[in-house]
Structure formats: C-alpha cells, structure tokens
Length: 106
Image (tube, rainbow, N blue to C red; front, side, top):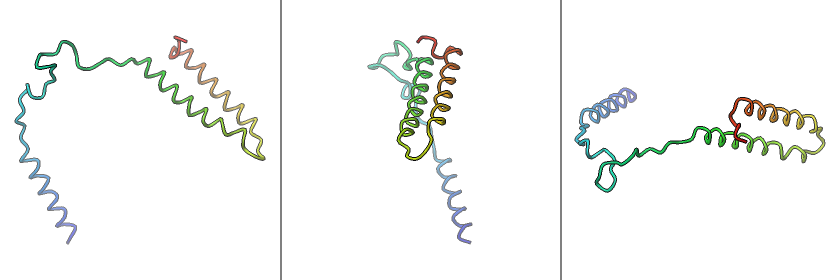
C-alpha cells in the first residue's frame, strides 16, 4: 500500500515539473558573446588528437612502472621471470604503438 502511494506521488510530482517548465530564453540570451559583440572566432579551441594519444600512453606506462617498482622488494619469491615477462609485454606494446604511427614523432 505504501509503495503505491509513493509511486503515485512521485509520478504526479514529475508530471507537475514537466508540465510547468517553460523556455522563455531568447536566442540572444543563450548565445555566447565577447564584450557585447558577436564572436570573432569559434569559442571552442581545437584539441590535438596526437597530444591526447601521447597523454594516454604516458598514463598507461606510468601505471605499469608503478606495478613494476615493488617487484624486487618481494621477499622469498622468484620475481625475475614475471618481471622479464612484464617488461617484454611493455616492449611489445611500445613497438606496436611505434609501428602504427602513434608515437612516430619520437
């Protein structure tokens, strides 16, 4: 019983909000401007796709380095083989990115 009452109240309140909404804004009120004048250029600045890829690669390799650092300090464990395998995977990933032209500027 209580669930139905809560459901009806929530539906009625959502309908009230939806029906009472009015959009009174003029086009001039929502358009961007520079000191009251029309825009000289676009307000959006282009973003370099290459910079985005390099930043993602930096973050990936940074996290991987953080995973490698504690490996030599593990006690009573043979960590040489997993570390070499991990470094080979990192090297293969770096070569793959280089041959696909992601980091061709280096």
